[in-house]
Length: 118
Length: 111
Image (cartoon, rainbow over all chains, first blue to last red):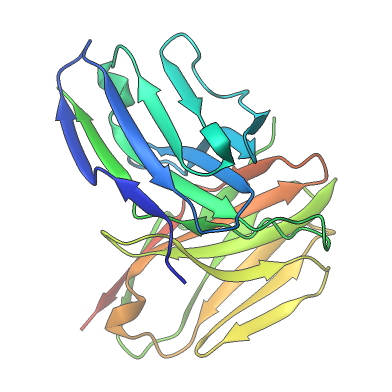
């Protein structure tokens, strides 16, 4: 089974520029998560999708960050404009559909995109 | 505010020695606790999914215990090997579907 794919793996941009990250979850996984992991901290959930609907985006800085999951499959996360403090690893994860049984929320992660804002 | 603490933040262990570290989480509204291993330049990989108080799980030389009443989980590594060098993350999930990660314990195995 193919894992979660993310691109690009690395990105360096200047502040005030825009950037977009792409994630393709494991086939059939209904839930998709975007995390931001700043150096020295744990991953922070930015947004959670269930199919193409948003379940939780309470920690997404909506003035500059946006995410979409059209057709309930792959997803893009955009930052516009970027700030220095956005330098982080952006992780995408997916979980299987859980209506069949009690969810464990076990997540399958992609390799992440390391963003450096200069 | 939900808080998940992991200790220590960093750990150096001699190859062959055993070690353990802790994840502390809120003891109320518990649903599940996950452990992940994150090697540099790779994807975080799930080690254990724990849901019941008193759970003990084992995968090779790595095992974990769970105490939901007091809000902690231990991860044990027996006979550390160089390939165990990684950051170990725990994630707490509550009954409101909130997922909170700890900052991780960075483990370095010394040859």
